[in-house]
Image (cartoon, rainbow over all chains, first blue to last red; front, side, top):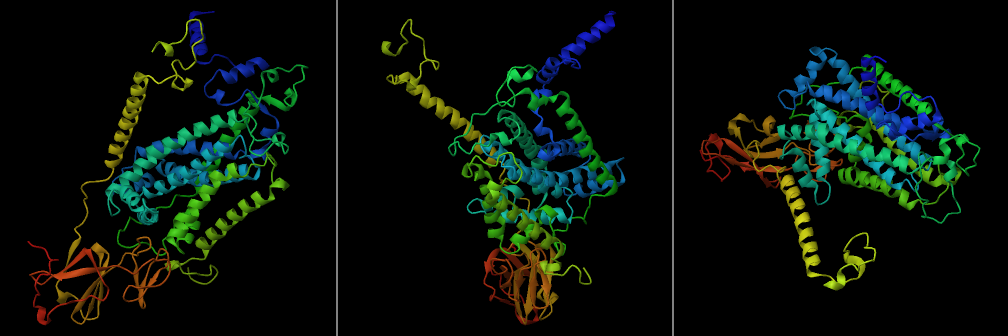
Length: 413
Length: 187
């Protein structure tokens, strides 16, 4: 072997301990000897890989987050968080920066898609009863990530300092002021004063580009770690109607050491036949899912431009002043009562979501879509989703100037 | 003292000299424990509080609460003028002036003049001519601000002083300035 080749081999081996594996042992070693690959188990249930089990929603959400981080960092090279220059710097993306419009569109549509994906992911986990022990805590982490996604969206669309941004800050911080006790202080510290101005923009900028993403990255790490520690994806085998309520089985890996080899040794309930190696079965699916997700974002970004309203006018809001679609249900609620619709109902919903796995402790219907035994829980969840959807439709199509009721098919608009 | 030392030949407990093994507390352990926790929690919470308090601005770069709205003659009888800078309506009835906030008490949008009264474009609150809530989510009437007349005769609206909606500042006819009621600027 010539010295160069040998040197190259040494460097390569120092980075990648295992080459492209050819044996099952190698496939297992490859998965556990690399930082990124070791996020995965060496083997996964064949069932868990079926598309209809998860539709890959959690992974899609993660991919969208990664796309958002990368495109967001690129946007930071152009954006100036100053009330004088923010709007122009965003407009420059469309007219001055090469591919700037694509960059901004990618960021915008990935953000919208992430809200969709994380809601669907949450619905999937709920409808499969996958939040039950031992996954209660990870469900809570997921609820936290859902809230972070909404806060990231909110702080994000404030930054262009257009009409939408200015009046969203005004209304959003006013809702916060309704929180009992700490409301006024929250509003004052979010705005950095009593009025919406430079201090407010800078604060929301720092929240958007550092504080919230850092919190999200940390919680995503915990979320992924706990998926593995809690035994991989929920599976019907975990149904244990005989087990006492609240008595969680000990967390277990999704595979045992015995299962790493294909032997004739019987291993009750965990026979090798039910599991496949993550390399390549899981990895190829993950790669394909990323390609698919990225393609959808790119296509949307190419064909649809992210909107930019007029420059912020601190005197008059637009009429009607509508929030982005994912906050329209909330806007419809606060249009009836700011305290009830802006504080009590959202607070109660979040609290119910976090407490849910500690209240619903029956170990039935785990890992199955729409388990009949869970009709009450699933029905309630779907009803709440339906109510939010109806509110969103009303706010989108049936609300005109001054938030008056209008018939969308009537003339004008 | 010697009682609490591990006995030779016996396996020491994993925690070392644990305080939870039921042995008598030694003064040294107690002092270490108390001051250790006070020091740790104290320094952490003090640093956190200082950092958080720094986020509350001590100096605000915001417009003055007092706004000079011009001379009474600038506003005709029966007019309702909207003052952009302070988002406030200046209402004149006869020789009486009243300043009413245009900021919706619900969530802070600017209300618009409607056929009779005021409407909020964001969530649809409806107010009457005096700013009282007729319908919608607004929790209370639009604020009314105190007005005074400066020595030069100009009206000064003081947004720091709330008054009842019935209170009108009556200016003398012929533009003769009234005495400063404490709301005018002293320059």
